[in-house]
Length: 462
Image (cartoon, rainbow, N blue to C red):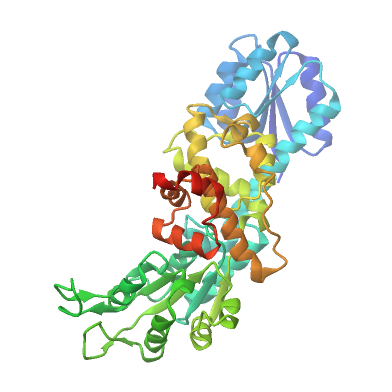
């Protein structure tokens, strides 16, 4: 389909030159000379781009810009200005214009700006079309992405939802493993039942058995009443065990029996209790390496790994960053007018490695929204002003060729960055990566990070 473009300029020579050039490139172009006529035209047409002069005979281009975006915020607008009006054009960008051209402009510069915008328009249309194709996959609003890697994930979700087999979701911290598990549950036969999530790394080892399987009154000191465990709570639905690699070996044996027999025994209890539950687990560790090291049972691994779903890190699906960024901006704008992102800001976002993956991107957007205020355009300067993005872009994240080492090494990088950002305060660092303080300490010990300089200096703060 042809894209409609509107030129608003009372200089007939410039308007005609733009129209001729854009028609040659296959666009459907119209032109008007006054602001009020432009507003009327927009009411009856669907332009994707407007080239708008700052000075018009009746109302100002600034007024036209604001009124158009109030009615149709999705339209891209490039301001056209004489040299004396450049400052006004710059102000227009704060009100939502995506760029400006200064008269007289070179045709090559004109083509470059217009082509860049149409690349973004085409991308948005492709994303919309993919959402239609994927259908039910997109009903999970927190799962965003249209890259080939994410389309594989959506396909795997659809397949897993049609069966009741155990699922093992693998991926780095912050990639959205729990979201994938919830998506499978919501599309499965168990959707009317409970979805119970358990973070195995956040619960002390001596309490984990009771947490999973429950206990009887008097089973141990402090057991003043019977407690129903997570497996019983999830009966008829789904239990999701995150950080399954943190499950102690002794408890792995009992967990294996639950998977085999589909029954649990409460701590201090004498009888087995049947449970009908779908089991999904997730890990950011390489379980095959843990098998060789004797840290994870082989029989349990194969019981869990019936249907594996690997989640790619954000740096391996950079084409999703723009879509994710806009999704989080809209989510945290609380219904305010949508904002646009200039091409230089987008480039910075795509060049950054995002060691904290989607979770880090969303946290970044939350801070950015506070900085943005009521402005409607996100610029490269906005991106740089938060946590020194230029400097952070130079952080080297381990390559992904050696999959056996990558997960652990990348997690260590994330923890180190969190400690740097928190100036060595472990409590604050744990909060940055949405991890419990106990889990953060355990992982510091695992990666031998007790000698981390900032931690030594500030450990007393915790």
